[in-house]
Structure formats: structure tokens, C-alpha cells
Length: 330
Picture 1 (cartoon, rainbow, N blue to C red):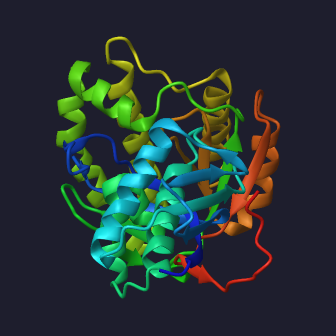
Picture 2 (spheres, one colour):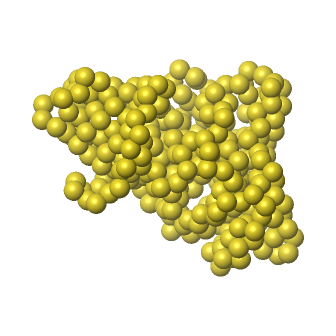
């Protein structure tokens, strides 16, 4: 066949009600429900080019080849799309994140979401977005949520993600206190399996997570920050508690992580509405009303160990970019 190519832009998503653990490892189904916010300010751009000149799939991230497990995961997703399209042609994937990669900022989520949609579009498959989220979820469960903008849920054992509310429903600001530019030592997939195997708190996390998810969802729909904040923070800390109790302990926090948590608590005691969440990494994400964003950003930037602070509004759905657009992929 002649070359088939598509370029897609997706956005990272940050879970407000956390996902941690798998109900079915082989099918990559989540053990608990999660609810996330897609971020306009953290973008992945991915080009997928199916071409007969290749003898195997290739994966390039910011101009560097990605062998081993990253390539294996990408090839598995590409093979599923090839099977749906009835083709065998290999693909060259070029991807670029405009934020730190593999460090706890959801780069795998936006990356696999972009890969799934770009592969589907390149091979001219007409699939509903819900079906594309299922393809992305099979590679990285959180990736299912990055195909939708705004507030998105992925229920326990769900095949696909669902939109809860569009970006304009509640245009909160998310500030990301970046505490490291390095990749994390333990990836999320390995961390989840280690926690499930060895942590005495894992079962409690799985039991209580649905309650926290329901509280976060109700608060989002009601646009009730006072209700949202404690549920978001408890979800993050309960998830990390299960990791800390693993053997050996899985510790993603750094001194700067704790410094930012204390900064947020100080702000709240002074009357500023703000709450934090932390994924499987050292960075802290802080949710605020837009009117308070400048104040909170300035305070976060002064916290010991914070390298920089990213700011984002709720982001849009994944989009297909026109061919020939001046997109930076290297």
C-alpha cells in the first residue's frame, strides 16, 4: 500500500480521583474508578506513518529512538489497529511532549492516546472515539482519559472512558509544581503490581477508592470546591499510603513534594481555596480557582526544591492535525 500518515495532538490528564491497581492485568483493566482533568497546557504531538519501506515498527521520542519495552508497547497497540484495518504494514512513530517525560506527569497517558488515534486515522478506520479510548486503555489505562477534554471518568474494570463534563463546565486552573526533570525509578505499571503483591493496605485502597471517586464526581458536577478539595487530597494520599506500606516501600515523594504540600496547607489556612494531588511521581499538582492562580503560583515557585511551575486550564479533546502543519516532533 502507499504511505498512510496522520498526526494527532493530545493532552495529559491528571486524576483527581486516583487510579492505582489492575482488576485484570492481561486486559489492563483498572481495579478502581478514576476521574481526571485534561490539561490544555501539557501536550503530546504524535505522527504515525505506515510505510512499506519498514521491516519493523519504529518509535522515536523527541528525536531519539525508543527500543525495548516502550517499542514493544507501541507495537502491540499498532498491531491491534493493523488487525482492525486488515493490513500488515509497519509504522514509524514520531512523538514529542512539551513537558517532562516518564516523571509522573502523565506522559504515557497522552502518548498512548495520541498513538491510538493517529494509527486509527492513518489507516482510515472509522471508529467512534469511545472505541479508540478502549484501544488506548489496553496500552495504558490512563490513556483512555486523554482522548476527551475536560473532566473524564474511567470506571473499575471499564473497557473505555466517558466524559463527565466538558472543559467549560468548571474552568479551574491546575498548577504543576515540577520538582524533578528526571525519569522516575519505578514506572506505574510495575509500581501497581508491586503494591498489589506486597502492601497490606492495598485491599483497603481498592475498597475505599469508589467512595472517594463518587465524592469527587459529585463535587465536580456541583462545582463545589469545598467538597472537592478533601476528597481529592484523600484519594492521592490513600493511594500513596498503599505504596508506602509495600515491601520494599515505594516512595515517590521528595523533600520538595512535602514542601509544596505544606505550602498548599498554609494557603488554605490563610483563606485561599487550593488543594493538591500527587501521581506516581514527585511532582505536586495544585487545583485553584483562576482568580487565585497568580498568588498560588508565586507561592509554589518559592517552595524549596521547586524547579518551575506549569499552569493550565482544562484542555480539549484530542485533535487530528492537518498534514504539513509546522509541528515540532524532534
